[in-house]
Image (cartoon, rainbow over all chains, first blue to last red; front, side, top):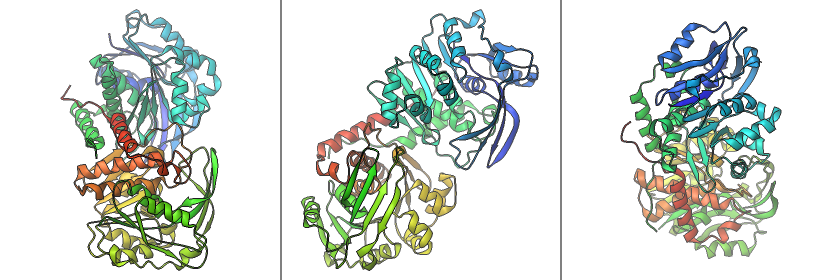
Length: 305
Length: 305
């Protein structure tokens, strides 16, 4: 089977200079699984409260996402509220209400436990570890995290980072976690924990992927209209893992292509609030933007001068 | 003949978290011409005071830079003093002493007036215009500027931008000049003034080059040791124009290669204070790093999924 993702399903209230989304569908597992569903089977592990409308579950199922692992428990769904200024690279969190997330004990349906690809989206590292332990022999495991866990649960987080193949985090988080201002040095420090690859997300500046002995740089797609960057990182990860699960090609060349597909998916997601752009996205648009990325980055080699 | 550059020759005092350079050789024309000299003939137009040591002139001449246009007049050489924190993308200016720069009236030696390539480095836009008017029929003219001229002489600067082929500026300056937060929109606004291409420098995030109907993205080279970013933008421009003058290839493919050579030169320059790295740079290192840029950015195309 394809990908299992554990993360959050949330209600977001987001304000940007270009508009406002009130109590809209959000959460790391939501963005990830929606993006990944364009390429692969995805099964979701998350929790929601009694207030979570059936319409959102139907949307996920319409994308062929397996929601057998979506627990519904008494209480309210996790809520996040944030605001972006004209510099759309960083959100200011206005309010976080964990609600049912505090009671979340991931328990994977039996059918999930043979997953080949596992993504531990941004969530308490102790929960990430519980999920990791339930999947028998995944071919590839990747994880994300955030500044909150870096400062509040560094040991649990370090344990997770030691056990995954690919770490996907923001530039500022890489620096924060390693206390190292230079990104190349920060990357080396994280890779030395044991993962094979580190993918550093840099918002509108794109992505750098480090291995022990190589670096790959992919730009973000220059867009004239960016409405809402919420979920861009999770959408990137969903496109990235989705493409890997689709092709099964874990060579360096295959993984570089996956980075570009992740960037393509993120570039669409920021074009509208919540998952609105994903809802009307066609596969031919994905292929077309991949080709635009190729045109964006291509330059002629030299023989010698 | 090759390139003429007008700009500053200066004494810099620079402090970074990694060290301090006191009263070292600097200035936009110095960095530009040194980088360009690896690829092409360069002739320099600038002014220095009586305190400017012969040793620095000898260095420029050792790089085969034509210094016939380097005026020496009574007074002190232009001095800049600045400081960088761990975020090496932005300098904090501590002190600026214009000195002889206030008396500078560029008067090009007759041999300069047939230049094919002209670079108007960061200097008063009125002086940039005076130089532009003295060069008879350049094949390509490019210019740089800075926030100070954007706020103090916007009309004179706009006149310059209307008359050049390529504008090379920082990301923040592109936004400031156009009062437009979105970089793609800012680029369109600048190109609509009349230039053919806009090159936006983004420090450690590389470069974006816009034309009316295309964009090219080049990353900065990820370096483990960055000692001093001073002059990186001028060194980039020197490598860029130097390579164009070397090949004479002004096709889109040729200009993209030149962007990468500019990025290569900038990546070396930040590895040491002042022009120290340029002084010991070998051409084979430039070619080798160009190949590293190719490896850094390459990914496989897709046929279709």
